[in-house]
Image (cartoon, rainbow, N blue to C red; front, side, top):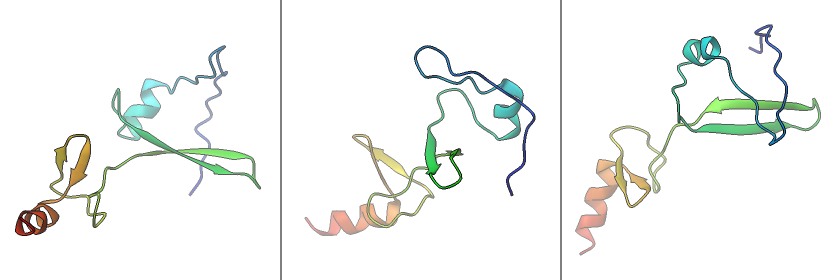
Length: 84
């Protein structure tokens, strides 16, 4: 459910907006966490959501292994090993 946090921030000269530390803490967002950006053109809203990495093949998000910047789950990694 959308709820106003009662916080207003200006966009700086480089187009950046600072998220207050209280809001980041409340939402479990740490420094350097990736955020996914959604746009609702009809309502003119920008929505930020904490991004969760998924397996490149099956979209699973548990037990991921980072291989050269790509994330693969253990089950898919085993399937890949069988291809050799």
